[in-house]
Image (cartoon, rainbow, N blue to C red; front, side):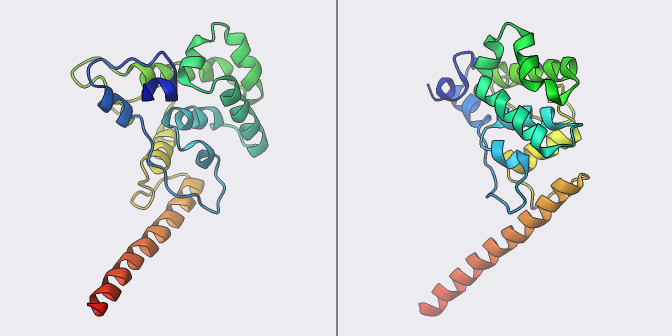
Length: 193
């Protein structure tokens, strides 16, 4: 029921609903002062992956934000997107971004991979990488955005993209503050004992 509530009635676990749901859940980092577009959509893995696909090769923040927000108003779940039988309606929503045929094919691939998974023994587990779990439309920037904003590994990786690198420097600094606070908390309580 949780999967259907979040992603619509087209979710399709093969054997293990718990694995299906947990592998599609996000563990986002805390909000940063950088106000990155990925931060608006990082609580939902499907939305984040669609977001990075839609924002690629577009320079205007306003155009990206408007089109991506309108896309998710029209298609709030992956099931809602798959239920759309008229690609022209999708095109109307994201036209300003350009490259419609490529973006549409990538959105369909992302959605299929997210909802249905892959064949084989571990088909219920959703993974994204640049090798055996490559999803059309998700390149290095998309994969790194997924890792940083949905898996909260920004403190440990060094992306090539300057904006992602800025976020990672911020996240590493925040992580260090969190850890030093824990160390100080432990040493304070040790002194009180």
